[in-house]
Structure formats: C-alpha cells, structure tokens
Amino acid sequence: MEYVLTSRKKFKKVIVVAHNGQAFDHQFVLNYVLNETHVKPELIMRGSKILMMAIGNVKFIDSLNFFPMALSALPKALGLGEELKKGYFPHLFHIEENASYVGPLPAVKYYSPDSMKPDA
Image 1: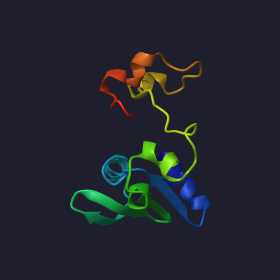
Image 2 (image 1 turned 120 degrees about the horizontal axis):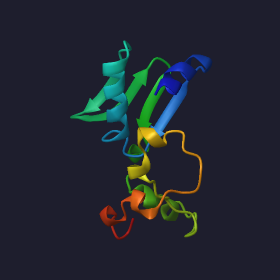
Image 3 (image 1 turned 90 degrees about the vertical axis):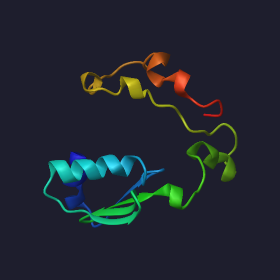
Image 4 (image 1 turned 90 degrees about the horizontal axis):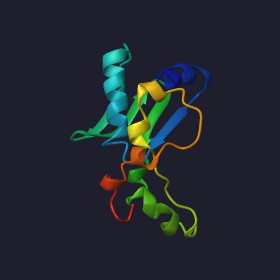
C-alpha cells in the first residue's frame, strides 16, 4: 500500500483493479488507509461493499462489476482456450518472515489444497 500511495504522485491517474475487490481486497486497503494514514478516501458503497474507492488520483475498482463470474471462468468466457487459467497462491506461506523469500515454489501444503473447491 505504501508503494501505491508513494507512486501515485508520479502519475496523472492510477487504476487499481481487483476481482471481487468490493468484498475482499478493497476492504483491507480501506482498513489500512483509515488506520495507518491521514488520507480521506472517497467511497461509493453498496451496503458494506466498496464499489469504488478513490484516494487522490488512485481509483480502486472491481472487475467483478464488468465480468460477473468467477475469475477462473474468464478465460473460457473470453474464448482464450483451456491452457490459460487462474493460478493458485500459497496464502499460508504469505507471512512476514517470508517477505523477502527468493527460491523455488513453496510446498503444496502452503496452498491450502484441502480448502479448495473441486472446480478451483
């Protein structure tokens, strides 16, 4: 987040896009901005969901508003073939001690395979 707040001064406009950001990613950003900075974001909300958040020249939007489907369904819906698909992220490996990690991919256990949906 520091990178976005610092880099925004170098550009006229910055658009940050996250799929389902309104209910997930943007919530974390808003929490950080409200608790760690003196910046007052401009918000457009629908209930507790953040439809749009602007911090100066940085605008946070949600691609789910343009593609109302699971991220994993997008390549097929856009006719991009079967070989292109959503990847996986080792969320359990994403901790402060590993912030500077450089090396091979983490072990399978860090990807939480037991919590994945069959079509994930």
